Amino acid sequence: MVKTLQYAADKWERKTANAGDRWKTNTLAGDYCKGFGAFLGHPVSEVCANWRSGIEAVQPSQFNAAISGKKSKYIEALSRIR
Image (cartoon, rainbow, N blue to C red; front, side, top):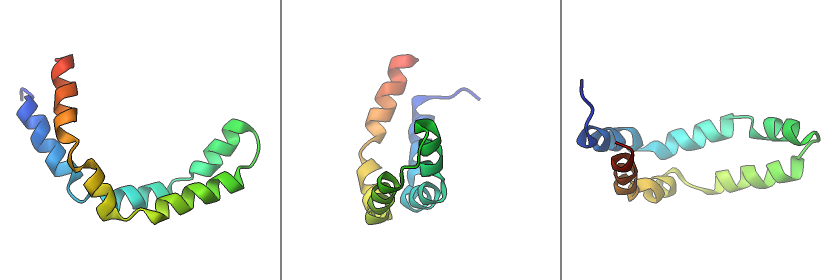
């Protein structure tokens, strides 16, 4: 199937509908701090506590609102690389 910009726009809508729930669940489930600590070579518990509290403070509906207007930017970027 030939992919079009309209196809990409439709897929954006499908994939981002209620994405906030998935974002929050997956972000909190990931072990960000372990990887970050390994990269730096020492534990980063204070940074991780702040990071986690920041993620927990964002509601899924807020995440959805933040990405809701980005479809046009996404399609514009795709059109430049075609």
